[in-house]
Image (cartoon, rainbow, N blue to C red):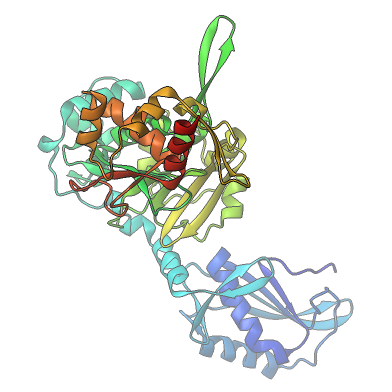
Length: 460
């Protein structure tokens, strides 16, 4: 008989490995709700045999009863494998988590991994998810407090016929025993949720160029996140026949999928917000809550498995065509942006898009720059006329208002995008209060690179 270890089957040579076998039972039950344990067979599948009596089977049963909680009731039988007596233990169980010798384990391939406190918490939440899901808890809002126009717009986008508000909510599974559930708050109330966005000058968070918080419903924030990213990354151009087509450095399809995933699959019990962080070398979309249901990053990247923390929210997004097939999100991101990476850190799930790097990456910002120092410490840099004019007006530390007055500019947003941000990203100016980018006391000063550039221009 061909035997090999799997996630549902464990092989032990002898009863000297009884304790480890019992641990394997609980690990397999925690993963799959079923387990098969053999004694008298080597891990390579070779039948070795055992000396078996009625007491042997009873001892195994008593050991399992003494060391596994909650109680399980296995079938323990003698089996003849290749003319040698072996013992087979089979059991089913759906009362996860199971503990053996006071600890919880999870089957991973053919090994038993001890669960951390966080992993154990996730297992318990997953097991009881139907009854304790945040999205299906009763809302503090009544039906009368919902924005009816938002509901009507949703029905139209979903291709559903007009109906009374109560009937529409029933069809969308947003009423439970006549009570509105919390998922409705995200779509149809006037109580906003928050999105935090920031742009950083370098590859770390030490110097903030811009920071903005957005407030709105879940659909509005998905749009705001996408617009913020596209406004703050490079957008090239290519011709499609006679027409000019914008080509962002990161595919819009991938960005949008990651943004939707961040809101759809986040842990809504976590008080933190979805965050967008734009660095010089990457764009990060951060979602509160690590992967759900003991999924691994490797599994979700393959796209063949999906465990949803918020199936009701996901279904609402599917109805308006923001979510397509289950378990296809990560493969869709990778097919459109192959250099994307995923990680879990500090209770967040982070999707990171690598940005394109080249010596000309700032050329569309008025700066074609490759900062090098030769033997005479000269700065090799080509700067647009408007940026040169901007640098020339500096006199010590200056505020935004002072700089705009010097340049005779009235539009603050134009100044921020076309002067301030370009110079910050080019390393030509720096903040006097880098840890407080929005401070009313914030001022800006020339960097040594800019000063050297101005000196060289004076000498030419």
